[in-house]
Each structure stands twice: as structure tokens, then as C-alpha cells.
Image (tube, rainbow over all chains, first blue to last red; front, side):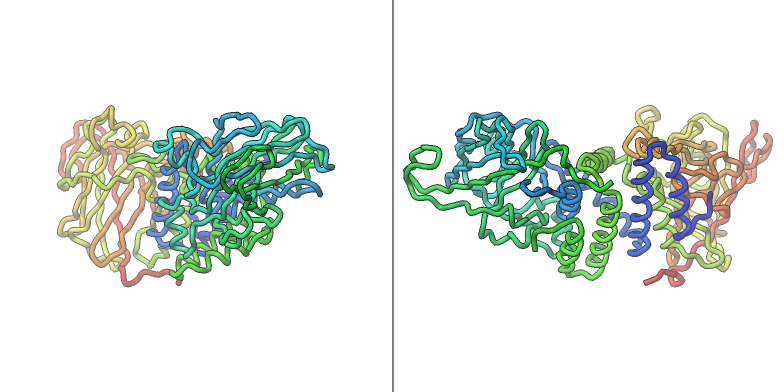
Length: 294
Length: 294
């Protein structure tokens, strides 16, 4: 095989990857080659544009470290993460809709008792978060793990300002009580731009797009026998609900972050200042009911 | 725009990137989104497969440094580099065919006088390289810059063994003489596997592919008023000519690396041992004759 031109090269590469011993590897490799070559054939890049593409990917890789995942941002902003999410979560009635994981989840979040304040003493509007976890049939799930993480009042996550704040904050793992309920105190998150000082920011600017996400709290919920749920709860009324840079908003995931006057809160805490209250009741999907096209 | 599913997400992203102020940015962005989403829709990745893809790209980026370009290897081994090369070099009669740049070109190669030995005292079979540079009409081009680089006897480039050999070698820039000719001494390059201790090596192994390239010398040739030529000259008879891992071989780029007995070589040097002689006469393409679809 030699003397390839811009048309014959595709079959040559397909013939080469057909030797993959694993059927899935072969399928993914063949699809990648076909779609990638079709893209290149369509746009007819100059050598300089190809070099720009190589450099863009290299810079994106170099931007990735323990606290930043620029390739996830790229996947998010090109709508790929939501597409993969949709493919993997065709949901039965009673199960909460899903959305992107995003780049700010970290494995090492501290476990806290129900009712804890996870704000890390950061300034902001106090927010009481309450909720429950159930099976699709409405059965409360006791002992489910509820991971939460969100931004501060200025839209920054803890991992973006560790030098300043010293430790993880606005991030915790809880376990639901015997009635499948959880609650905790924190500060209200704000809308924020995704990190846009890297290659993904360059791309958004070139595409004439803003980098903002509407305010939200992330949830990752797991219980034995159920599919892990990864989702957010967005704030009703946020100006970016219809232009989320990562295409993650679904109506069923929007809730009022209710304005509450000073007084006794739902968990019995006496508040001497106004605060917000967000409640969301989550439904998990049974593992056996996983629906996925072959 | 919200509540996207796996089908509606593509139009949503297309609508978003349509705001690009630069027409080419918009065209490339739209094509990227269409082909990337079609790929994802076809393979229906699990979340774990998507995470593998993110990690693969991240590892590929982290592998890139001053002396290694893993994304170029990825482009090369998926046939994209040869496709881009073909699109950009639809050649007139008299012009030398092109092939991939590869990941081992470096900007800082030393300039040498014609006839110099650029082997850096490395062990190997002596090789005399001679050639000429002409216009497509056969007019010799004096003062053309001829960059050359190649592997050693074991298939390694200088930049892969800088700690061992101490300095760049088997790499130089020459200028053609008044008759458009150039010549130099070096050692014969060997076939070699591309670096396969990284993500690209993992991919090749999974695809059941070997990582080898047939033996060759790289050339990059430039002269005012002509398009820069990037190509190789391969050794006739090499066992990998038909299975080059980067799909770079063209018949017109294969030459005998002729076995020569001891005696007076073509440049007048007296050799007391056998050596090889490679000659190639290059034709550049006039800048005005560049042929490229809009």
C-alpha cells in the first residue's frame, strides 16, 4: 500500500485498523477514521491550519493538571459531553434527568454529617439545601451517598482558589438518613464563566460565544442496585439558562432558590438574617432497568 | 435553548458557533461539530469510553515537549497528515512529490558547508548524499536552502538520544551551489519504529498494527518564488515500504542507496571502505502555480 492521494488514503487507513483483535476497538477506530477524514476532506485545511490544530490540541493537553481538565471543557463546549450523557441516560419515569459532570469534580471530597455547614467560612448568601433520594417507584433510599459541589459567590470553585482559601470547600459527601433525606448549609453559588484563559477560551472567543454557565449545584448520587446519577440543580431566573456554554440545562433541573426571611429554617436552625432554601427530590434509575441501544 | 437530546444537541451547537465573526472559523467550527457529533452518534460511547477518550487526549498532550510531538504522531498514524499533504500538494509536472513532515524536524539545525560530514561521529555505514534543486522547467536553483534530517544506524534521531550523544547530529541546513547542487556525508539511516511508548503506541497495539517506518532521509527545500517542499527519499528494498505506519511512501520517492566499493567517491573523497551513495534531483513548484481548491 503506497502512493495514496486525498481520496484513497481513507480506505488505506481503514484496511490497516481492521486488524484490531478487539471488535469494539475496530468499530471505534473505523468510525474515527471515516469521520475524521471526512472532516479534513470537507474543510481542506492548509498546512498552517493543520499546524494550528496540532498546536491547539497540544496546548489543551498542557493545560490539564490535577485541578483543571481542559479536554473536558472542550468536550463540554462542543456539546459532546451532553450528547454522550443523553445516549447513556434514556430514562424511565420517576428518574431524575442527568447533565454533564463538568471539570470540577474531585475524588477527595470530605464526608460530612447531615446538617453540616460546608461553606468553609466563605462570604455569601446562606443557602439551605434539602432533598431526598428515592427509587423510580418513590421508595426512599436510606444510606445513599450524595456528593455535592458548587461555586462560591463570585463563581469560583475551591480548586480554582486553593492558594487563597487553603482547603476544599463547598464540596462534601453526605449519606441519606433512614427516610432517604439529606440537608446541609452552604452559600449560594453564582453564575460563572468556565475557565477561559486557555485554548477553549480562545475557541469560544473565535466562535463569538460567551463562556458563562447559569448558577447551579452539582450532585452525584449513588446507592447499591441503582445507576449513579450525575446532575445539577439550576437556579430559576438565571440569565444564562438559555445560553449555557455547555448546553447542560433541562427544565426539570431548574428550581427556585427561595428567598427566606430571618427565622427558624426547615432544619430547625434559627437564622438571624435572610437566606435561601433549595429543595430537590431525586429519583434514581434501577440498574436492571438500564436502557441502552446496542 | 435547553432540553437537548442526542439528536437536537447538534443543531443547538451549530446555531451557537454560527456567531463566529470570521467566515473560515465558522466553516471549520460547523464542520467539526457535524463530523464529531456524527462520530459520537455512530459509536454510542459509554461514559467510561468517553472518559477513556478524554484521558487518551490528555496523556497525548502531556507527552508533547520540545523534542516529542505526540499529536503529530497521532495525525500521522491516522493518515490525517498524508491527507492534508495531498490536499495541499496537487502538483504540476516536474515538481517532486511530497510527504509528511514527521515529528523530528527542529528549527535549530546547524548550517554546514557543502561536502560536510554531519554524522556527528556516530557509528554506521558511510553515506554520500548528492542532489540538485530545479524549477519545474528544469532550471537549476542556486542558493536554495536544503534542510536534511534522518535517523542513525539503529533508527534513532539525535533528539531521541541527546543525553547520550550530547548535540544535534544527522541534521543540517545546506545551500545549493551555482548549479543548484548540494552534497554531504553522513551515515545510512535505518528503518525504525515511531516512538511507541506513549498513547499512540497503545493505539497501534490495540489496532493490531506495527509501528515501523521504512528507512528514509527527510528533506525540506526552499527557494524564493517557489513553494517549500517537504518530503523524504526512501531506500529501495526496505521491508516496510508497503506498510509504513504513517502511510508516507510514494514510488517516486524511492531510490537505491547504492552500495559502492572503496575508491574515489563522486565528490572526490577517497574512501578506504565500502559506502553508499544516494542521489535525488528535486523539482520545486512555482508559488504562482499553486493549485488548491477554494
